[in-house]
Length: 121
Image (tube, rainbow, N blue to C red; front, side):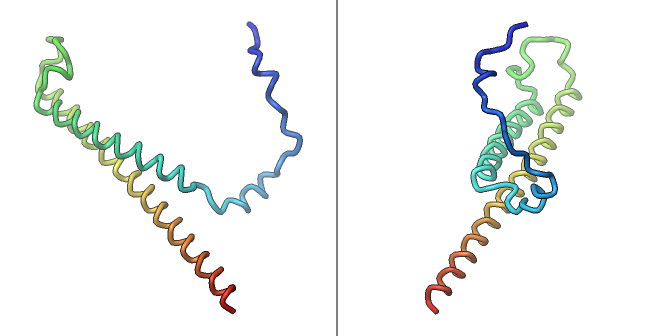
């Protein structure tokens, strides 16, 4: 087994931060970029799962192809319902992501108003 060349190019970490200090400084677990990315992926997941669930419930031939063993309509209904439940779970994560974006926006507004009050006095 050979070790890739880029493995030797990585700089080692010289100082280790204790776990207790990491927990104390855990004020911002998820920033704007992470929340926005999660919201966008959740939106895409919701749309795709709703479409696949709709097509599966309607027994669209393009979903399972020409395989005759998957012709049972109960399997299609079950798969469609599972897609709808998965879309619901994506919706929960979408709501959490949007709530975090709103929270970060409110924090930013409060900090800007505090700084403006300091400059005014």
